[in-house]
Image 1 (cartoon, helix red, strand yellow):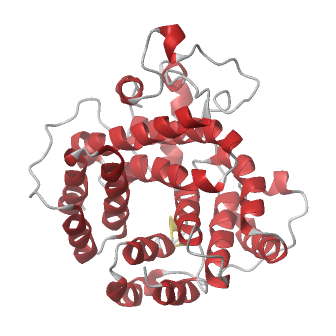
Image 2: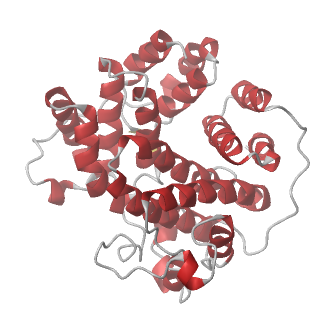
Image 3: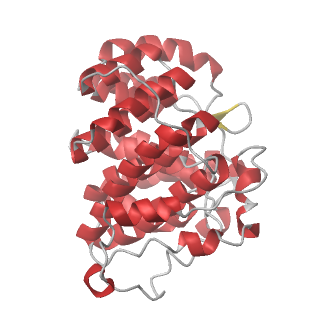
Length: 357
């Protein structure tokens, strides 16, 4: 990837805030990283020229963050959080800051409709092994600050992230496959749906505790026992969520993208984290995908659509020509999943999103 073009794009974007028009997410940093990653650097600045006009200015701070626990999830403190992480990353190595804050932020993975973790995942990919230059370190700081300001738990997921909670039997003990594709398939297939699928994601998430089958369904995916098992579980989750987009995407074409891109971001971040954090990372990613599915997907899916076949490079090129940030990010995610699994069906998800959005 052309380091200079991405870094120039970050410089332009870092004059803007993480949200606009109320609380819509600024997708610019994520989209330009994906475009540059896949060799479409020539589109980056033209894409930004069209996108920047909708964005708000960088928010001003109110006062320094002192008690971080009370400031988590307070969007009025967005400017304070951005300043906090800017300072932290000037004083400490980025991996150290990420390692400290990942377990603090992970329980609030629903932040900004999961865009907090998604933006962090793109930032970490740009840093590792791209290098810790000032623009990329600054992008990680803005991503972490956004996540902290919008920190929001998935209802009922606190038990999944509790290290003291009992862990179920291993795959061998249970006579089952563990956190491989079959296990994830069953867990996703067992998710209930909220009855009233109206309003934005905040209004929908608060309805989940009223669904009797929600918490048992959330607990259906057995916690990972080892880091390797967590990585396999995340790979399977992204794979299955990508295929589910082909069945359910028509119901909420934009929002169901995040059932794929949120766990993808977590999977991309694993190599930069202590391996002790991998199992809770799977648990949080599963909670995010489960919640988005339960509040946006219909009960019954439709047959997979007909999408013109294409090689992976052309799949992304089509998304880049389409230009919508969600189409670009979904193409980026399913290409990762295709590379990991070899499942050609995944490539159709990006084209389907291009048809729907």
